[in-house]
Amino acid sequence: QVQLVESGGGLVQAGGSLRLTCAASGRTFSNYGMGWFRQAPGKEREFVAAINWRGGITYYAGSVKGRFTISRDNAKNRVYLQMNSLKPEDTAVYYCAAAVSGGSLSYTPGYDYWGQGTQVTVSS
Image 1 (tube, one colour):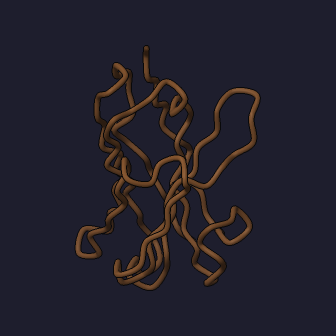
Image 2 (cartoon, rainbow, N blue to C red):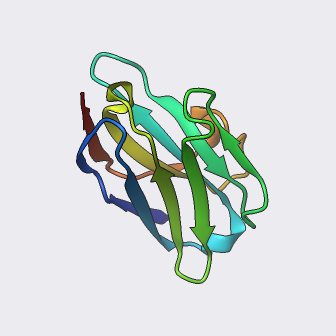
């Protein structure tokens, strides 16, 4: 079992920045990849970014590439999402997820555990 708790969401103006944190507990954190997804009202959950177990390989959705940065600290069992140059279309509930079974990091089915989500709202 893996427990994931997101924090750091909030309300920010367009062009601003937020840093999301996901705290993991349970199984050995450094053994699996982690990802961030988001879901806007009326839309399906979509991939945002992912990072492999060691932190050396990252993946990004085209819509956030160059603006968002995913990172992890295995000593602290944390994964982060630094979001810069935020846009109103980034407004969504953001979820972190753990790919414990080694699934594909770019797709929702690759993940076994999910957090409860944190709301990010970007005003224009």
